Image (cartoon, rainbow, N blue to C red):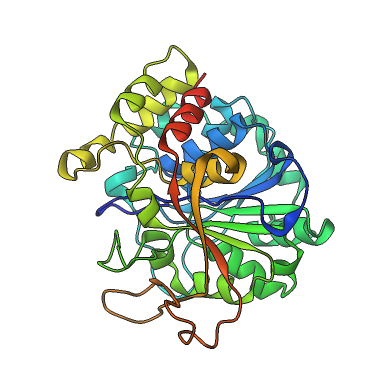
Length: 349
């Protein structure tokens, strides 16, 4: 998730949806990211919690999709997992220009220090070559998402940490895509009208409101949403941030380097700690019993107009509101900050 004005905390999904009995650590994940700083931390946490990451798909958002792909590769190198396939996806939102979040994430998406870390492209580019189409071009992220979900229906959990463009395109190309998934977890939106790029809109949903609307309207699998307000309420304490970035490990040094640029934001905004954004969604998904402390079921829709509210997540406060919306989604509204801090400390070991 991106955004540079009023960055607050994102709440993360809770509990395994849909009732399957697969152990949390054995969850089969595809992460769709716009790899800025908090996306990088989220990938690191997912790998540290021993989940099965089948692939990582890239979407433009915090930075360009070209930077996103390189940044994901850098994270995988730091984590010793360069074999995980990475697929390049949409370069821009469905219907309007891309608004990057460089103020917080830096011009390269990793705090301006991306070039200090190798991408491992020489060793890993063969993944994309082997997975090319008959026309000889690399597979688009949306195509790969469709193929994975179709091949093993009900097995893949899709975690959306950036604008929802890739997922919306997949649902447009294959109407069954949203049914073939096991579940979707979304980091984005706002349930109390608190915005971070517009007064009433959160970055991921505001960047591509049409995509968010498509996903919420067409997906037939369970959906859990982690809204911006929950992020605002759940920063990790500064002492935890200090310990996390001062360990004598490659991962800790990486986190210290990529987060340094964002510290200027906290000189202007009082938050009570470092906001870990996308990382909360991963923690709530993979450690649900100990991390997510409050979850609500709501009927929701996306505001597609409005000078100050385009992309806002609206929901039915009373039974007679949004009568056209039948399905509900789960929304995580609070976290156990101490448990999140413990997971992040383990992540950098």
